[in-house]
Image 1 (spheres, rainbow, N blue to C red):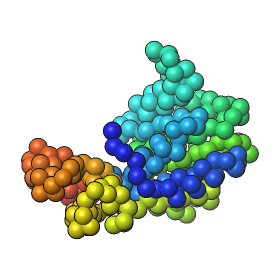
Image 2: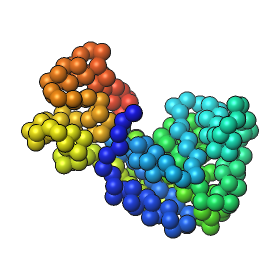
Image 3: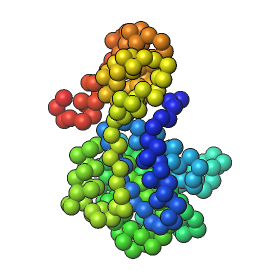
Length: 243
């Protein structure tokens, strides 16, 4: 399991908003692998949370996954999770749950859900305007597609425009933060790791430096079976129509 480093300021702000007991609609976005989900998981660790990670598939499959996330919160010991008949029913259940207590509702990879269910942004906007804004729900919409999050969630054309209460653009770590992962290494070695990984936490972990950077590079970056070997091509395929 990857360790969690840095992001103390983001955590502090997320927790301060949580303590306010008011409705929140927070947008968390940033490039892939930069640590958005790790930050959200750290924040949610000690809080009542429905965590729904959207899938790059159909609206029906996403509704099934959302139903499972809700039931995992309500009945964590249940073997079989009943499915809601519609998104309206699933979201109505969340509305009811949030009446009773402060509840965090996370939709991770929101662009996948919006692609599978194009009406979801309008549905959320209606709920925020007419029900959620007066309650205690703590809504987090998270996404890795920068253009989608900036245009279709934060932009003026989005049904959600003006509904957010805050946004966090998660950037790669700087050199000093990168060096926290390997305090035992020299300044020069940590500078190399920063240059190689660009300060992306996932890559720092996957580079797997123990004592020798050259060995880690040969094993995890230049070896065809290494995790990082295919990563540049995979990123291009995910972000561009014609890599």
